Image (tube, rainbow, N blue to C red; front, side):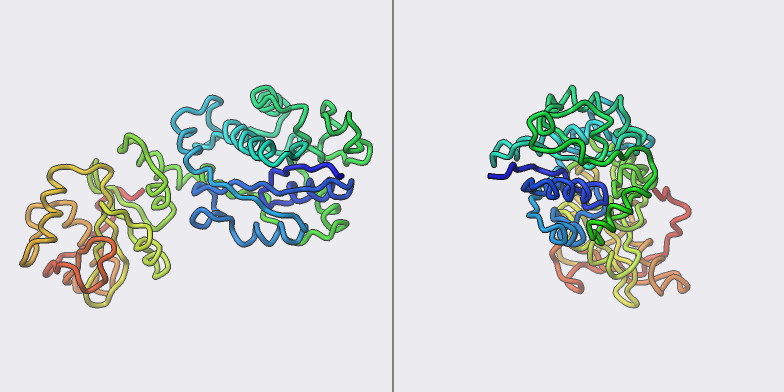
Length: 356
């Protein structure tokens, strides 16, 4: 019976090559992929179609698990700190290995495989960081990095003869020439960009994230989902507006809206959908929300945030030049045209507000 390995699979070239190197030596491989809302390739808790296609090309089954909640905890208490932005790379890598090891034990596989390359990434793929990961995961003997294995201490799969160490390549550093040549030999055509897809390395996303974490005691996956969409504008310490930049983002905001949010959009010449998001509910917001259920029209006289959100709806529509328009406000789940009307709302210039 062939030995079975769990491959940490990102869909990138290195993890794909690690799978091929194991299959070449007769190892049965299952690709293990963690999805997260902090990853650009994640679509609503599911692996991106490109990840699925990459696993299919390699001829391996793909097992996916969601790690968004794990990532949120790391953002507050990263044992090994952050990279250049808010990326807890070492803690993240340890979490991936921990989750993969749990799955390995569950299905009775023999060892883990990673596509890590010594010296390729400055924070998580140098000898010191790999040592930290090995020591803290307590899995060094069972974690094989086939691309750089010959520069590292032998693992159990090599010592036991399950994998022939001499047949493994010698890859290290940030160059990609050797990997590209190997990809051609194995016939690998589907793999993601080496630039990576972690939003926690994106400065603009982290600016929004830091703002949210400053104003909210503990964020949750629905909050992260909203961070990925549209243009974000801070209105008050408790409220921000998110504007859709096209019809696709309008649809995404509509789908991601939480029960505590409100939607604003002009009734004529519809443009951007504006989502008004409370970081926490206050008595003032609750009192004004109740007006949505009361008969009659609404007035913006006593609510600054609603006035700003409605004014942004006018600004980001074809009513901008006229300066005024009627704006509908509604709760999530209420069809457009069934909300309350705000009459003759004056446009608001976003440059006078805090754009995140």
